[in-house]
Image (tube, rainbow over all chains, first blue to last red; front, side, top):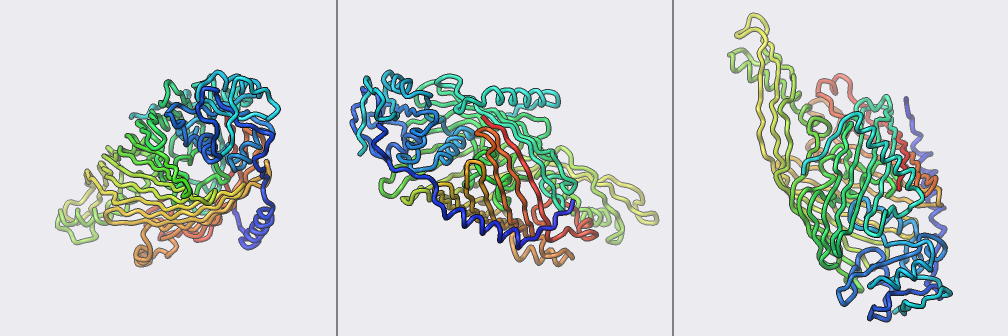
Length: 150
Length: 440
């Protein structure tokens, strides 16, 4: 087999494609009011900063200020899941998924527990000390506390 | 920690089990069997073909599909703060890894606090931005990482350290975050009879043939150049790293997506071998006839440093990265660097491009040495412009295709000086690679 690369044409075509495609910004969402951050009702904190949310859901912050364990939970997929990652964690879903794949396959961490339904997520948060997650604002959140965003 | 090895039939069984697990687990994104036990894995098959010059594997110019990987990862959280995990990996890549399932990493991780945790066991080696995840095809667009830093010939022994380390993360408030990892231990060479070390020292052994001939001439009192020595074998061969220590620091800057880091390693390696030669003294000279000749090697060498300096910027689906590598051994040094750009254009398509410049023999002085023995200067470098495409066919199945435009031959398969003088390798050449991966 003999490859005879036409180097200039390949290179120029790739650069043109790359520059044109990169000019279109990726999807992005601002943190909106249709989503609420919930936590186990035993948590003494009433508010949480966005940076802390990012650090928690990336596995970098694992302890609340009282040294108890943080248990982050999230929806498995869907528009709300994407909005939380893009709006609150400020990264693309793909980047978030890739980050956790790297953590898993290098043994450095395991991703947040995930749930198919918001009801199941709320039930888990209600029953699990230290847990924190998100659901849509319309979801019944009795038994858990809503954290304000600092 | 001794690597576990199984042969032939067992390898096929292991791969089959992983593929079955993958097939039945595809709907489960997280792969958690219950709240505290996680199972993940991947299976991949690749193909590569070089236009000229054998590279990464023997006879790559003929094309080879001897490029298979399968891994299964188990992680558990038995108690608060403690995590344990293990990854089994089987890999066929040319002459290396054949029919073996190895423990790729296995360690316990006790995270006392966010700023300080401890790991002990066989732990992925933090080196450069991507060494820890180099086997994980799903993490990047390209099939091969830039070889100027992530040389696949050296992958088997610099993938993980065996020892203990400390790590942590500091929130620097307005100044970003700082991650660190320091460790002490050793590197395990799974099979020194194949791959990098054998290539290196068999090549050196052949280059010693004239010196062996001169030594025999001196021994028998013949005039220099009388005896003809031929390298026969490399026996009782062993490579170990008595100790290494190192560290990594990564600063996630206040500019979202920009991180800057550096890693370094220092240590010792020990080589032990017997080089065997057949020496012929022609009739009419003292000691005429064939004589066996042995050179016993039992040496410890210092690794002054291996170091990287890195920067990476990720914004939405755009990734930019650059890294510089330098190592210094007792009497040699190596340099390398690359720049990379990649973008995910849609759920299906990602493209990336990198330019990698490897100077594995230390620069201008070595290039002049090549010219002194009659070899072209491009034996002293290897520059690689790579264009990669990745197609995410489903959430669990991807396909990659890439082409390397290469100038120079410094990282190619070893050949003897005689072979190179008789038929020099081509300066400009290319490599086509394709790979598909299932993961769960």
